Image (cartoon, rainbow over all chains, first blue to last red; front, side, top):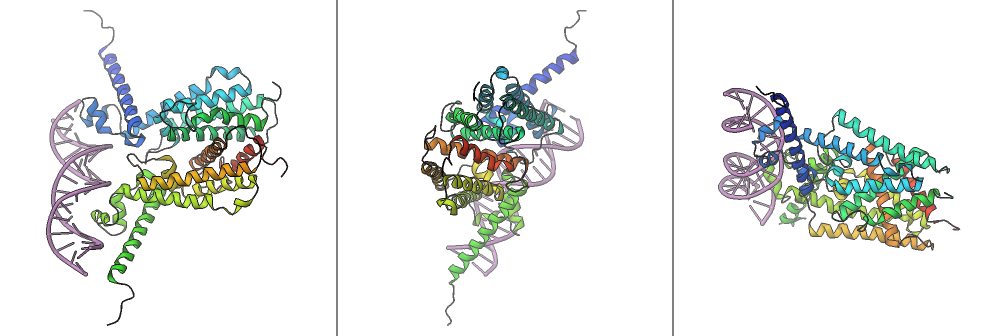
Length: 213
Length: 213
DNA sequence: GTCTATAACGCGATAGAC
DNA sequence: GTCTATCGCGTTATAGAC
């Protein structure tokens, strides 16, 4: 008898994971089309050719789908923000690349952006694990911003933490306004999308980040 | 026969309006407690001692309740933003008072703030009339910010419209972060609530708004 | 004409038995 | 995996009461 490459268990498990990925992909398409809160458990099942109760084999509840998307969203966000190539550039370059990375994450993942930063789903509270992931990634982003500013060697009128938070608030504000006003336009275009560079300049000028270089 | 102070029609109408106000008040309490999207039509009826279908005498749909709150929200917001006493002060004072007015509106009306600026309700689209109100108030706020900056007589690195939009994005960003992180703390306290003045200073410094006075 | 109630429909999330 | 069933929601139809 020929040895199977995968045991029956392994094959089942792989199929299971494939279905999970499919569910998440369908869920994201729905959220992008109709809004985060419009996610429809039954409709996901129908699109998979399943009966709604069968979906419970893959996710314990609708909230569990949100939770997994929330968790993965923060992981992707963290990778984008914290593994930028420009982590070696000048403070100004770092600020600019952080700003762009943030806005582009929002533009490319409107659904996750809303889910992660706006909590539009009544009753949805991230699990402890997802919450830990989220807090960790945010803290790291804030720390990197602070480090970039510290590297500038200037004396800021605020603490490093406050400076980082000001940048975060501005990134969020510009991105959210852009997505609300011109969701179809890429970063760099549209009433607010165009403001990214000006927003960075604001910090650079106010904090004199490129005094000498 | 004694003339009634109010005709039957007038009395009915007045009662009708009182119930409408009560419905809106209950709706706001619900939204504040459970999130904007958690508004529950049936539960409103129950709190009024009515059967759910009876509520349709007062509002044509659940969406109509959202719409009225949205419209009123923008009217209140406009009054707060556009009728500040400091409309006569220096540009710096005006910027600071606009920032505070914005943040305080958000803090005192968390529910309306979300409904107006974040659209957390799937399927809810403001009626044409409410939309007009909203756009009008926003344009006026943006115009006033631009006017205050023009009054400063400085040469900005951006157009007046862009400058106003940058301020709007920052006001929104700081307020939303504050409400997400420390909803219970008033403006001026908490991780982001404390940043209001620093945010204003950023614009003042970068744009040299108080060169001489 | 204005308010309210009862009954009923369609749909979504979900639990349980198979 | 399915089928059946329950519950709550927004909503409509309809009819009686003021």
